[in-house]
Amino acid sequence: MTTFETHQVFNQAPPFENVNLFACDSALQEAVAREGAAWAGAQLHALGARLGRAEVLDLARLANAHSPVLHSVDRTGRRIDEVEFHPAWHELMALMIGAGVHASPWDSGQSGAQVARAAQYLLFGQVENGAQCPVTMTYACVPALRQAGAIADKWLPKILSRRYDPRSLPIEQKAGALIGMGMTEKQGGTDVRANTTRAEPLDPAEARARFGAEGEGAWRIVGHKWFFSAPQSDAHLILAQTDDEGSAGLSCFFLPRYLPDGSRNAIRVQRLKNKLGNRSNASSEVEFEGALAWLVGKVGRGIPTILDMGGHTRLDCVIGTAGIMRAALTHALHHARGRAAFGRKLSEQPLMQNVLADLALESEAATAFALRLARCFDESADPAQALLGRILTPAGKYWLCKRGPAFGAEAMEVMGGNGYVEDGPLARLYREFPVNSIWEGSGNVMCLDLLRAFGKTPAARDALAAELGLARGAHAAFDSFADGLLEDLATPQADEFGARRLAERIVIAVQAALLLRHAPASVSEAFVASRVAVNVGGAFGRLPAGTDCAAILARAL
Image 1 (cartoon, rainbow, N blue to C red):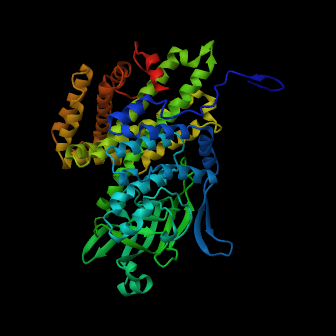
Image 2 (image 1 turned 180 degrees about the vertical axis):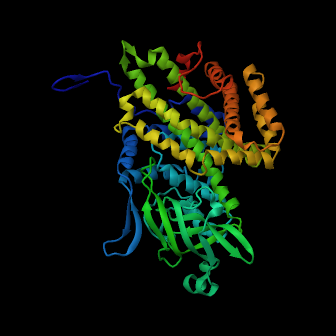
Image 3 (image 1 turned 30 degrees about the horizontal axis):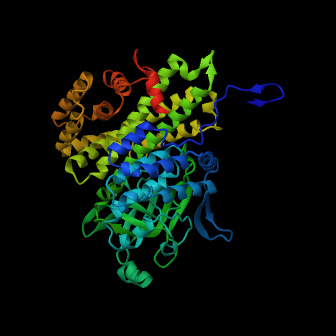
């Protein structure tokens, strides 16, 4: 209690800090174990304890209060295109890179590595989200770069390094490397086939004269990118139009920040974007003034090549959203337990219990779905798991990310004015939700991709049916819901108008199946009653009478 000259400050919840973010999350612990990463339990406990410390949580505040600054030229007027970050950003990046969140599935050699890494990412998502962007892109670039021969040999050891090295230097002088991406342009946005950036092969003699053997296969890039994520990265994967011996179309290129001779590449950062959220991270608009890049994959096959990266970034949109949901829930529930109104704690009032329990259900379902999806990536050598991941990735990115802003607004409302002001984390978390819905394909793009998956591979329905079948018989309403969904998928069709509703039904069915199989009855029964037996829609806090809110909330935190 604080005493002012005119009054005493009481009835305030203490800050949510010095909490083990893994140990207090039963749903996450259980999902890690059942999806194949029980071996990572001790590591995740240690990480959860570190991330929940007051000083680490405050790094997020500082990194977002002090946004990155672009320095186009140095004091003498030489072009440098450098981005300056607050020290808190670098500490957060060092934490993530040191934990291997960018690399562990690719070099750990352990089964369940994607699941373990997903749990790490979900925990970091409860702390700060801007730093997750370059980490995600670095993680996601590996499948694409493995197609790149000499580039992979030179760059992958630095990409997989556990040492964060923010210095602007040629790759040979770096202890670790970050990779970004650039796909969209002003005139096309999501329609990347409308890109106008062009690539022309560099004259082989000129390439050899400048770079020796490393110059082989160089292309000159002229054009722009409207969103060039993390311009401080050591290299980017980009798309550009090519025309080589009659083979035209978009191709994927590896664009380094420094060229093999140590000179800066001709990448001109025009500005940093003034974004709604994700303020700690630098997103830029750039021009390529004859920049040099090297082909990844085949000429004209840029979209399939970069989609190897896109699938993993979409996975992180799902996991990241689940992490922000969990953070918003814990802050709201902690506040409600520490503050009284109208004679009793907020958390003891029936209507508030309904709201909090509804949020807890959504958060647990999101966590269960995210880690189940990560297992699909772990087991992608199994055709059925690969197909399941192929449909759950766009469906999950659509529905979970779409639920995010409403979730954040409701959690903020629990805290009232304390949540709305920038002094606490809820306003920042609320601003973070929309980016996962927009980045790597908006909701409509995800739903169209889902239709494309079913249209190209009818066996995807069988993979979904097998997953839902594991929970058959546990609840009559679920069985009816699953039957109706699978019946609608029995005949190949492209119902574009209803694609959003289809994606929603798929995710809710999978979440319900997971909770019916693995969660306590208080959780699974309430989820089925509020999501499966009725249309979701509307605000949170509409759980049916008889819901055991106390049991749900005791499990949540």
